[in-house]
Image (cartoon, rainbow, N blue to C red):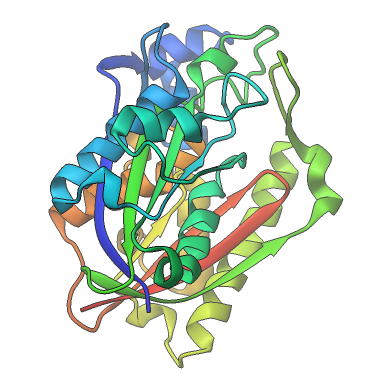
Amino acid sequence: MAFIKEFGSWLPDRVVSSEEAGSWVGSDARWVINVSGIEERRFACEDDTVADLAARAAADCLNRAGVNPASLGMVMVASGSAERTFPGPACMTAKKVGAEGVPAVDLPMASAGSLFGLSLASRLTEQLGPILVIGAEKMSRIVAREPKERGVAVLFGDGAGACLVAPDSGQAEIVDSVLGTDGSFSEDLTLENGAPIKMNGRSVILQASRKIPAAIRAVLGKYGIAPPDVLSFLMHQANQNLIDKVADTLGVPSARFFSNIRKYGNTSSASMLIAACEWSRCQGFQPGAPVVFAAFGAGFNWGALLARGV
């Protein structure tokens, strides 16, 4: 068995409004908000690394859980914005958080990385012990690259989220997950070394709006659960319009999908865990009630994970 024991998060202090972001591409705040639902995002300090962000979210999670970093069985860091090809941020994150000697694994995946990490951790925790899954992104470094694309540069922000997965007890049991990958669309969302993000927005939205509901239905269907019976959906915060579309496809009120994209923008693989951390503070798991995590990202990679409060 595997359990979600605790969440943690870290967000930078600097707030970048959509008025400022829109000015980078000759647009205004109203346009940015209409196409994305994003009113502001956070940017980290210039000297901050992905590992710095990850370690701060990790420390928040471990402190809330009352867990000694040295007792961890593994540290996973999901990020699509690491500063270098290797070593990735996981080894430095483990060092910074006091988990030296603990195996640290990088998941170099944009947007869906934290979901894949939770799924993997749920299968490994019984063997390894508690696993800390972290999503951390410093997208501000990337959106600053020229040329800035109108429909891309305004979307992203910085931040980190963390989740401690344990084999024995926690707030919720991880029941199952469904994951998928389709390399046919690999060129529709890419980030080459030193280059700006290239995105075929129409393809991303089209595929995400199909694959996310299908994955959610697949994992719920295995246990005879209908989407309206789910307490909350914790989804990658890519675009408010996409979140609303997924909710509509599933026949679920949009309010059932927790959303903080208005405040933080798209923080890629950090977003789902940042959202989960905030959700757990304002609502949280209820005994026996199903909760679904879902994400879609470059690759294309996507999936859904079912948890149930204990």
